[in-house]
Length: 320
Image 1 (cartoon, rainbow, N blue to C red):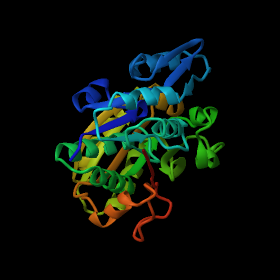
Image 2: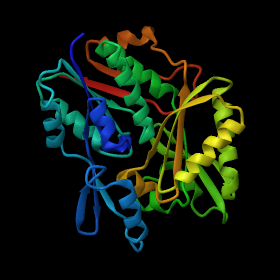
Image 3: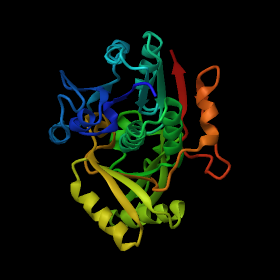
Image 4: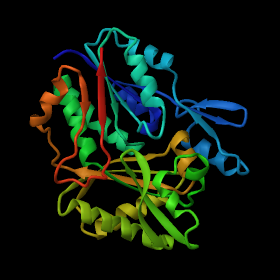
């Protein structure tokens, strides 16, 4: 097996120490607050950002994707590698994937660019499995197919205190149908084919955890789950949700508790939180390995017959 590099962007919402410890190159997006620009996570920590957001007097920050040149520079750091796997936020939420894709065609080393159709802790879950696979000596094709398997099985539910930030930021997607709903109706959202979509509507904040648990049971059955959670200046929300999961008798391993960074936080707003989960017994589907080796080196993940057709999918594009 040759040396394999992993590259991602800051919307994976992992602390900088994680990338250093796991030999991952992270290319940050940028958030602009007033006349000042900051690199997500690098120059703007979550706790600092949400304090600034709460004091912004209604002025929403602006975000921007990394440039093509920034990705070229990140890829060229790995000239000694045989392959790069570059894992990114949904192309329907950001232009980051496109920048990475263009950059991948400008370097000599082969690069597989993955549009996860996910965000935040969803991307983090994919990175976790890729790191595990690389440490186990898996091949590039095996790693790509494992990433595909994770993305197929991940389910996400997230809560926002208000739809205002998603609406103002232009990322509200199908959840726009919830705007103007009855007072005190709280939305539980998901990502559907890479865009924000409504999952459930509940009356009152107290019912949110109950409905999220109901969704988890509906979609996972009795399987043990790998769980990741993130919050926007609301750590107590994660503690309450984790306690509710235990009380509900759900078997799970919490592998991640994180915070939304400044880019994702711009769109979900203070008080938001999310949970993602997938089966603990997830394994590589070797029947799909041929897809990572096709002549065109482009992988378009097709829908599984036993899956919900509106569940997020991934498109993998390999160049080089």
